[in-house]
Image (cartoon, rainbow, N blue to C red):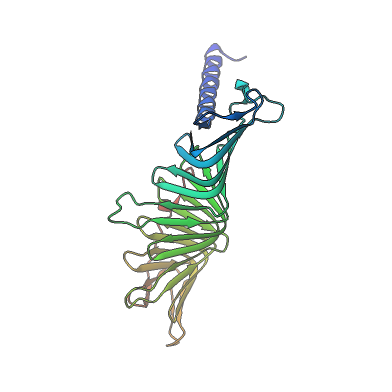
Length: 300
């Protein structure tokens, strides 16, 4: 039999969970400014302006036109429609959140999911906190999804990312705005453009993670670095663009196609590649990649 103290704890836990759920649902409610047209009771409501303005949580939205609708069978004027409504924005859509600005031809938002999906040539820019000492991150894709419950965005389909002299390609990109961290998957690659005497560097693998402010990378899964005549392979690599150094671990091998020199890492060691000097050397001791720095929000 459940004791009174246990029952009280269960009731308190249930109440706390309900409050959290209600808080999340409330933060997903969208507010569209202006006087709407349409069926006042059932909807949908249409808005037009120069521009139409709306807000949901920390997102600010502008567009030429907007439509607000409720699920079939539920009057839009019924309070029970809140949390289930959908909003469609079209023409010159601009979405801002903190240092992020996203643009596209259409935006579809659902209060039920808290997701705003941007389509029709979507693109986004994320400016550095210190604009005098950093590069703007630019993203383009077939589709972008902005989550109002956190500061994460997901881009998919022919994704392109640029960050100063770095440029990336992938089929999917998750960008954590708080950590300034990008995760690229789906045949990802990242290229650091040639600068001065340094040749262009291209890194590929199964997954690329980039800290865009620090200009550091963590790539894993069949890693391949190509720079001039040097090709280095391994299981994973940590690359610091500011320090011009890469550490390749796990069956690491580097081959220079011009000199025919091959450098292999010891079983317990790693390879260090100086990208500014086009030089590779074997390290007898193991190198530990700081993988903890590259975890997305909520990732264990």
